[in-house]
Length: 350
View 1 (cartoon, helix red, strand yellow):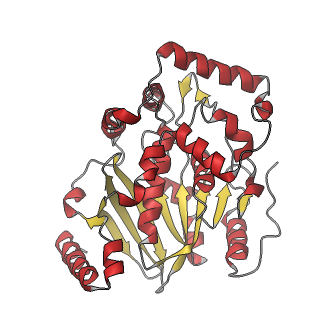
View 2: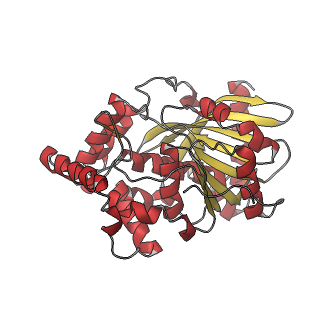
């Protein structure tokens, strides 16, 4: 489909939304199709979206809680030393309530004010690429948020009218949305009747760029992982507005660093129907002295409770990298959604 044809389609759709029932029209006013976003930097650029992250502390200056280099260094040294002595289980005497944990996570991720106003915030999007095959459709969408700027996601829908159950997938470090689908067989989920939305994570190459961005945001009272989680929330918000998606059957699927994000998102937002993960976090991760997106002394005390998947409505922890394969995950989700059979073979990882 050409750009002009897409623009015509979305102009018609906007007109139909405006003349439909008042409640439905109002529900879509936050979402705007913006074809001018189609001319964008390539997703492979290491600078993609970096300036948006670095400008956020100034944009939300009233919410910032800066720390000196000495304070930040001391806090990070404490969590590394504490984790080596295996004292973390004693950080909290008792598990927090669900509401208390949500409040602590929002504060630790630096997104409390961002999430409070989420439903009132606009979101613009455009279609960067799309393919329609006999068995499924494939779109690469670019979103623009007023706070975090532009982020991309790949949306795959199986053939048929829907609405389809959907997996919101968060890849591991240094993987784009195409590499993720090859490595973890998105095709298998489509064949089982599941749609997928794969978020393109920014500044997550496990190198100097991620370290410097994560460290700067921590020093200003924000968190790179929090911005990733916020983008996933906006993507979920978009998906729930789509008629082809069954929002009551939206599950989270995470791998590695993306699994850490998915786990926090599951505890932050109880509307997700299931969580599929291959790891949990201690928030002390570094690589050759460099910080990763979720390294945080503010989040560290809560990692024992975040590993308690039994506290969630439906969650399954698989071995790292999903050696069981996508079939085992589909069985678990089918059981959760009452579609077919159950997952008797897949067992939680130790």
